Amino acid sequence: QLAKSGNVKFVRVWFDKYQMAFQGHSQQFEMQFLTDNGEERWREIYLSPIHDPDLNIWEVSAVAHDITQKKVTELGLAESEEKFRNI
Image 1 (cartoon, rainbow, N blue to C red):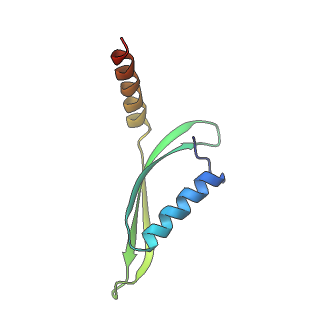
Image 2 (cartoon, one colour; image 1 turned 60 degrees about the horizontal axis):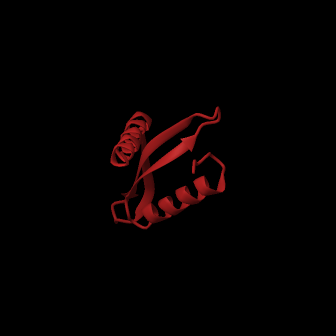
């Protein structure tokens, strides 16, 4: 199922991942998004806690990479492999 900004699933996933990062656990995950114009996009997302000098978690760093082409290729390959297995 696709996540779209503002929908419940999108908000819940981000909230849960940020909570874990604020507890000191770095996060790495992929999400499929629907853009405002209906285009499907994939992102690989990294969330990392940032500590102050006393090792208290001060903030969370978020980095996202567009991996749409990679995912399209992976999904197409998986589909082809499945078809080949069923021959």
